[in-house]
Image (cartoon, rainbow, N blue to C red; front, top):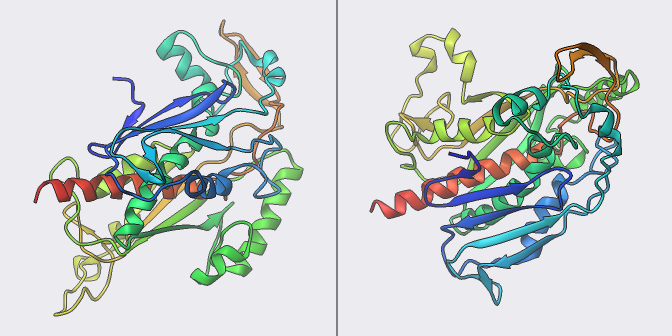
Length: 350
């Protein structure tokens, strides 16, 4: 098992490293006659690429996608779709001094223990750069969902400990952090600037909402849709926690508070986050993903080298100071992949 393939019917295999020649994805199981062009995928990649925020890396990758197969005259053919994204601006020089050192918070130590070899250039496959392939594949899934009237939208609800106080969907696109609370967005920007000036980084929480999803998606017992959503988001390197609906808050509730009353036409509340017994209810699906701070920081840190000798390092190179907002389209992509997969599975069982 390689762990590089995701999904049951809508299957995605990604490949590539941060400083390799290219990244890419192969999608198998996409239905035929779906309108699809490179522009559809590029629009999502542009949201993830560097430069969307002043806290993002200075690495200047255009992330231009090429569709190599599976599309003919603007429509999917039902055969595997191969997507390729070349690395054009990799600079491995800054990593040479770290070749034999395990960077704190990174996958250096664990990759070495698992494989006995690792690509030290920018973290190799453990780099956040790998997520470009996920976004490309998610863009194809999003096209499939749009045909069914399903929409997936993410936003920033917390950054550096500063949480939103109101949720105004119309405000999400109005600031660079994609935050639904303009006042909170301003405070977040100041907090981020403070961390950057100190050579440090920040974490945050992304919220993803799925609307238009029909009731009945999900497979008991081990392929519950909320379990698959949690797995998909936890598969993103920066994500350290996922909650759905009331999430951890539900642990402090009584059953009389947490249960969602059902009326003749609809549920009265949505503490379940749109999922009951691992199957969608038809309500809005509400998910939150907690993202850790970027581990590559300019501050001095303690670690060891490959021989176990204690050393102190300062990580140079080009890095984000926060995964937000660039991680938001990545989270959306993984959710799109899960919903698309379960949508096909539900169709197949009828």
